[in-house]
Image (cartoon, rainbow over all chains, first blue to last red; front, top):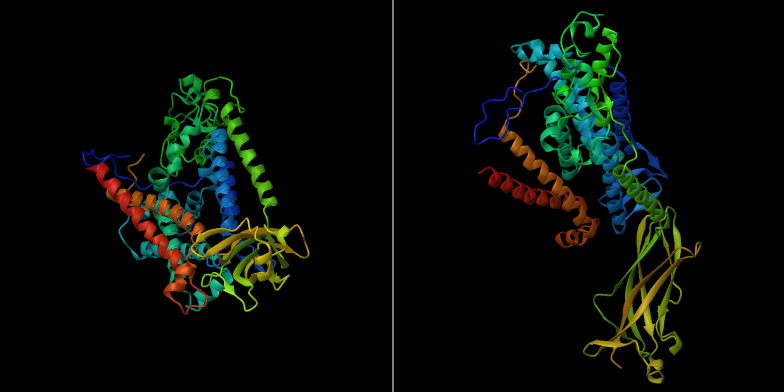
Length: 479
Length: 84
């Protein structure tokens, strides 16, 4: 970096545009495979349907998350939080074992940058052509190439934005609305917002996101130790570096294996020199390994001057994969994963909320009975519809069933994945008030109003294991 | 090896992007947690009593933009104070 003389106001050196050189090798092929797989998942998944519904749909307008046959509700927020903790711990675990695998192969920033770089290569040519093109004065040919690149970039970014929104609102309907220019303002806003973010991050900012904006890049070194696999340059073997004729035994001219061809620097998407040791800018993409191996092959030297290795092994010491850090991360991760699966399997697919009628506390019927009205919100989180029977549990069963439902055994059909609002009434017999003064669970909480605790229980008729219980209060005039 | 390069974004741009990015991350988390516990539908119903299907998307979006603005303010203030 040609750092300008730093002034006191600025901590920054001016950033230089990096022109990564194309590279071929086993790691770059692995990276491309990973990118294809991840992009395929991202762009393909929203179009997949499952039981007549979009398979993966984070339906925010309806407040439901659909993951194949599973429907998650806001009440299941804990599962989402749990999943995020698992994701964070996996990141720690893999970082401790093999460094920044995430950055090199799976991070969206890397994957989309890879695609944008490919589009740049297709329209503007390889590294030296790109640099020449940028240096050249504006011409029709330069404008044509740049315009083509921008068209590809903007088109791809827009499609990305559309796909992103398609995870949150049914994508086929969204496509129809966008095609007919009838999408809502907010849908259009989010498509443009996310498309713009993709364009800016992958086309313009690229490695600067990793260097200046990524928190993980800053704290990942805390997970490293001397047994972590990192991309490293074998200085003991490589130095002293220098140019030489092909086929010459480096030992005879007092040189190491490094020919100082600088290919490892040219291919680096973050523009660092791995021979200076591990740097926080390194996103572990392994492009330098591929580049160096190709040079070693040409020179007929053994591969692996730059390789995945641990610091201990580079220092000719024993390296341990199973060490306390890895065991602790691994055990925690396994426990969380097992717990998650068990909790998900044991998750009750029905839910019940009870709202007391807001307008009237109670009504006195002409028979003298007291009536309360409730709204039962029956949630069927199961993948098929159920008929639920509502029953009442009260604390005064021995006192002669003073409270009863009206009608006595109401049933409600609730479709899969929906909340059904069921209105029910509860009555308290008037004649019992006189003969049963031991109304022990009644408490007075307002002048003239007594309340009693009651419970509603819903049970699916076709599956008695599907049951839920909710508490409410029964209001009556003080006796 | 860098004589072949041209400047990209300057320190001001970098500060601005960092501020925006940190605010975006914090606002995303805030929106996620807030709307997991608060359903904006009743608010929509109050604002538009005639709406049969309330549009939650609009309130989610406004909520996010609100958090984004507040977090951006905190972020920018921090950056500015650290600088001077």
